[in-house]
Image (cartoon, rainbow, N blue to C red):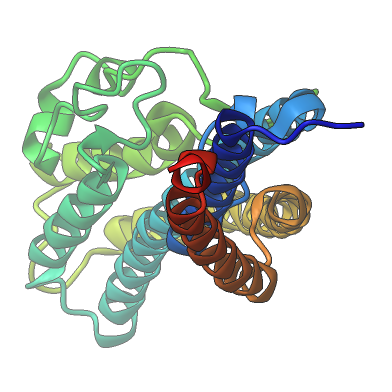
Length: 309
């Protein structure tokens, strides 16, 4: 025969109430946070898998962030390189115009403007960093701003302050690519042409390049057309390589983005709460709390002491 005691009934009812309240709190937490737990301890044995997934997501996301930064840098480089090539083309057109019209009155003025445009392109910045300075990103890679300063320099090499470290970016596991260029590699041939033209203009025996050009001046200017064509071809090759790199980075970024989304979905499948189920659990737990509270109330009215009296 089992004995039924008032303290035993109270303890049982109280435990039921506490369990119902705990279930209610858990359901409310899932609804408010939309997560199955608020910390790793709440996921039990699944915490280790979640930690691994989150670490993988963080690693791939870091590569994606790097890739996006590199893509922006390559876009800025493309603008700077095209500015340089456009200025070479304009300088060539100015010389061609002199040969066609036999008037060099504004030639040097035009060339000085195009040289400054090329110098600005080589000194282009991205997010406060000089693009073509190599590892020396805090100092402008070109230290002259006019053709006069270029001609006065000991040589063309002395007009560049970039170092020899070509920028390299790590886009993934075991995947690093060269994503930058050095100002001296891009500009040496171009600067030599402008330096030679300035020196020719300043030499009393050959210059100045103004008015109607002499036969010797025409021969000299014609030679510069071929040199400018070669410099433009070299610059276009750099532009093409930069565009190819941009396409590679774009493809890599798309792959990394897909990986991040896939990993996020896997994490979400383990951490995101089923809101419909959480709402149902909340409603059921509320009913259970009310029922347990009513049982406790009834036990207070049906104490054996009342019958003894």
